Amino acid sequence: MRLFSFFLCLLLPLSAHAACEGRDLRLDMTAEQHQQLDEAVSQILFPEGNHWIARKGDTVLHLIGTLHTNDERMGEVIERLSPALSEADAFYFEITQDQMEAFQKDLEKDFSPVLITSGPTLIDLMGEEDWAVFSAALAERGIPDWMAAKMRPWFLSMMLGLPPCLMTTPDADRGMDKRLSELAEAKGIPQYSLERVEDVMNMFDSHPIEEQVQSLVRLAGALQAGDDHLITMANAYLEEKHAEILQLAKLQGLEASGLTPEEFDAEWKGFEDQLLVQRNANWMEQILDIKDQTIVIAVGAGHLSDEYGLLNQLQQAGYTLTRAPF
Image (cartoon, rainbow, N blue to C red; front, side, top):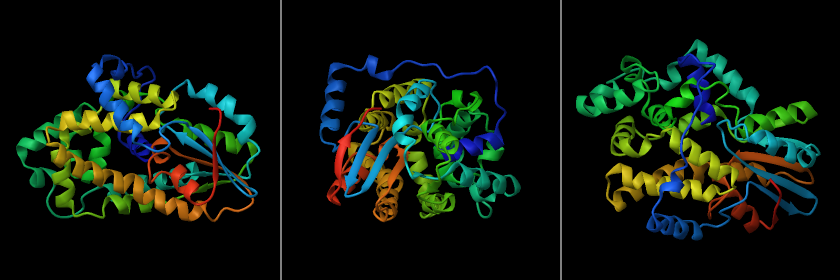
């Protein structure tokens, strides 16, 4: 999400008055839906907690689960976290603010990394009927179809996952990552990246464009998020229920997609493997090299839970885990 907010700055004007408003979708769930969600979450390792401390010898890791979009309630969280985190030797992010800004400047000169630069456009690959559905959804987000037709499928899927209200919200990307980066800068603490922007984009482009388009079409209904989705995600995040966020998205995605459970599970597994499993494995190689320091590791909250989550992997590596105040 943080990466794509930079793209939005290039594409869209920001209004000083717009804001996201919505209703928490969990309030309208039936008893059966709540039971389904509770059962799904109960199968997940480390389903809650946005601040965990992992210790092994003289190595202390503060793992902070983040939300990449802004919420004013995060200011109070930063105030509570500041005393403990200000003693850290370094902060590690998915990608540091400096590297994101450098990439943004490069993109202002050359937008081709997110464009289809040769061959058929998405209209040709998708067909006019499916394209009409997508172009209408993208128009709500301020992106004309002539521009969208030349964009890479993975980029459009992420755009559809951003509620239209974010397109006109000031400081939409001032989420927990950015606020923690501001804290580190104010305290003079070094900041490092766990990956490069180019690595993430290469991962998205690892599948043939035809496969990306097919997946985009199959998940058209499930990908689109509205104001209610954003509010629900923010509320669940501040309740420290990061596994619930993912499992709710999965249940709602299945319903919205129109796919069979088997078809949707295959698509979800691909998403999970690409965005969570592979990246967590790459990050762990760096994290396990950290010795005899106190370090803050701030990554999207969805990277903490489950078997592939950073918490379970650290426990398996011999670290002692303690949930800490958030």
